[in-house]
Image 1 (cartoon, rainbow, N blue to C red):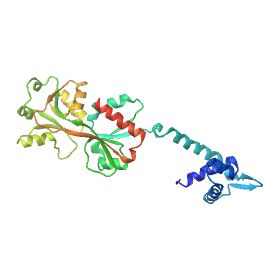
Image 2: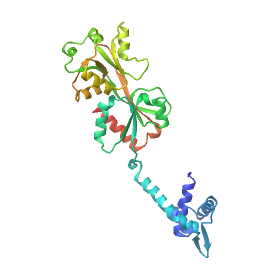
Image 3: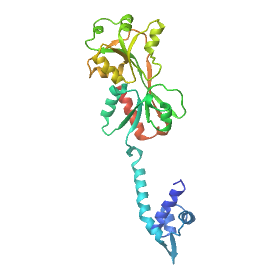
Image 4: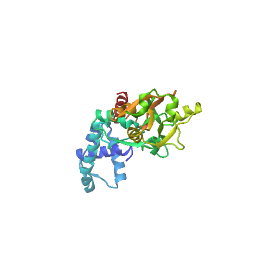
Length: 293
C-alpha cells in the first residue's frame, strides 16, 4: 500500500456506509469532486464498479459487499494502532551489542527497573561484519561500549569514563602486599579480548617500560575471566564498574593497577531511524539510569 491508496480505502469505507457522494465528502472534509475521483480510481484499481447508482442512491456490488467487512476491520485496527501511539507498540525484544562486562553492572539494574523489558544480548565481536554495520542494517538496536569509527546515520551518547582495576581472589597472596609493577608482571593473567593477535592497553603500557606479563588465558568473556580468577591464582585487569559488581557476588578483591592506564569513554550508539521512537527513547534513558546506578 502506498500513500495514495490509504485515502482511497478510507473513502470507500465511508461510501459503503453512507451510500452518498455528498455525505461522504462532508464526513471526510473534501469536495464532491474529490470523492468522485477517488471512486473512479478505486474502480480502476480493484477492477469492479463497487457502487452502482440506482435512482438517487448508490448500491454496492457483490464484491463490494464482500469487501466491506474486511475493509472496516483492518482500518479499525490501523486506527487503534495509531491512537495507541508507538509508545504502546509491543516488540519482542531489543537487541543490544556489548561485551558481557555489562551483564554484571548495567543489565541487572536495567531489567530490574522494568519487568516488561526484554533484551537480546549479542557480543560485539559477533556482529557481522562489524557492530556499526549491524546498527545500520537494523540487526542491532543499541551498542554499548567504546567509541566506534564515524558512520553515517549513527547517533551516540557518552555514558561514562571507564577506569581499570586488577581483580584477584579474596585470599590471594598478592592481596596481602602492595602490588608494584614487578609483582604485577610476575602474576598469571587472564586477558579478555576478542581481537587477534591479542593485545590490550595493559600490554601497551608495559611495552612502553620494556616489560611483559605472563598471560595464562585469553578469553572474549569477562564472566569466564572472573570465574577463573575466583578459583585460581590468576588475575584480570578490567573496567572498575563490572569488577565492583562482580565482587558483590564472588569472593574477589579489587586492587589499583600499578600502571598509568588511560580511561576509556563508554558510549551508547543507535541508528537515527530509531531516534524518535518512544520505546527506544525510554530504553536509552533507562540504560543511562542503570549505568549511573
